[in-house]
Length: 230
Image (tube, rainbow, N blue to C red):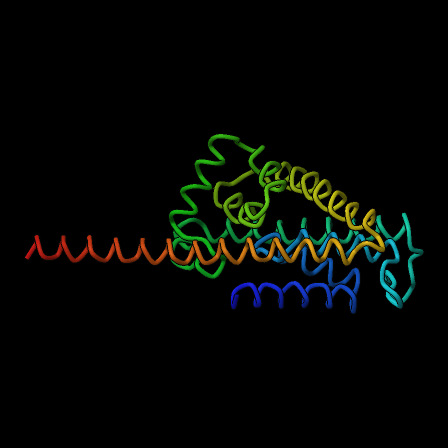
């Protein structure tokens, strides 16, 4: 329940930020999501509902000008997400390219990357080659962990940017479209997200338990090896 409460709080914070700052919040949250998970599905769905005029006294604005609700606002929301994500992805690619794998193996924990995750990413890129970028952009959670490894494995910049832009556009226009179509039924959609939050919370608990089990197993193995060596 505690984990679910925390996730629910994050969900409320995300929707509040978009309600208060509109396109700027969407742009920034999607920029972050290119490197670290930032609830991009919720961001774009809520943005789409905002574009449909689902919330009283909340408009889509840019540089002080209100964008007409409907199609113009929907396109503005989807573009804000697409551009923000693409710029964030370029930043992540640069971190990977100039930091290199040794640096990330030492300090990658700040980006939720470690040697095992980099190994998995390398296998992913070996299997799908450059298309790993496009496929990764359309895969939940994975999409936030593509940018940095793409730089590490030196995916060509122009191809990387184009594939990222395409995948991000599909993602942002699709989820914003779902929110736009939901419109005044946003509360029902938000309620449905509550069940997703509980599923995520359960996954977090399982993940923590699995990491704890791995830690204990490795520690026992190390102690056993030290005893044998002694």
